[in-house]
Length: 274
View 1 (cartoon, rainbow, N blue to C red):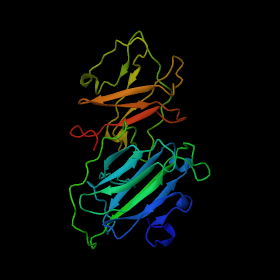
View 2 (spheres, one colour; view 1 turned 120 degrees about the vertical axis):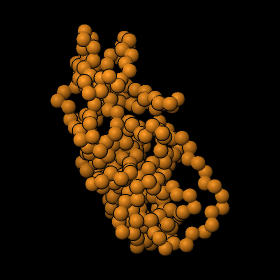
View 3 (cartoon, rainbow, N blue to C red; view 1 turned 45 degrees about the horizontal axis):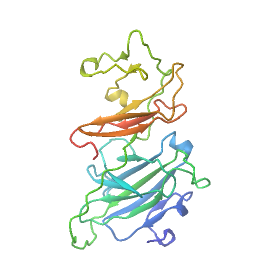
View 4 (cartoon, rainbow, N blue to C red; view 1 turned 60 degrees about the horizontal axis):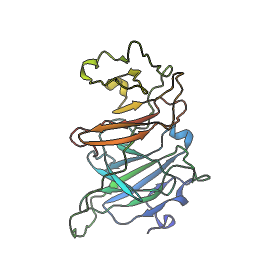
């Protein structure tokens, strides 16, 4: 494995350089930059942000990167996202040293960055909301060996959780309060598109908000909050998001000052994982 001090290539944030494990070489996909965002810079997020560009710095939408951890992995596509600093991201829920990232492209070699996770250099075992940014460059003049066989397909990941971009959603004025007499408040723009089962006795739906493309600011997510009758967030509660025979379970987190206790992305209906 390449040692950071032996490399002349990647630009690495010195605050976390000693915590990383790097597998670097004369690969098609090479790490150009590793950015770390502390709790203030992350603004409540806890994500691995990734971009893949060509040698002219142009984003390569459609490339995919693999995020893996000891008992699973997920493959995430790079999207166009004009004006955004990163083309894809994936949330972290484990501490420093838990995740590694490389590009997934059959027959093409890739640098791999390991040692990623939540936490700080001073407190790497605590789940401080911190983030990483990794930029890979696809080199055009690298001699690749012939592939020896079909690559292993990626396993299904652990329940996929929020995938927000590098901006949190807008703050609400106050938590929504249940109204058991008149039913939930529903945005009239999408009322007719919904199917509702409102028979729950304990957890009652209070409000449904829809955000159009301008209001969503590039996000494509389901934001969920669970509160008590006084509007206080119930961190630790969980909700289920299901589609086409699959589902994920997402926990509500404390997230002081952040709208919604949890989020999960609305991915393309033709492929809920990738």
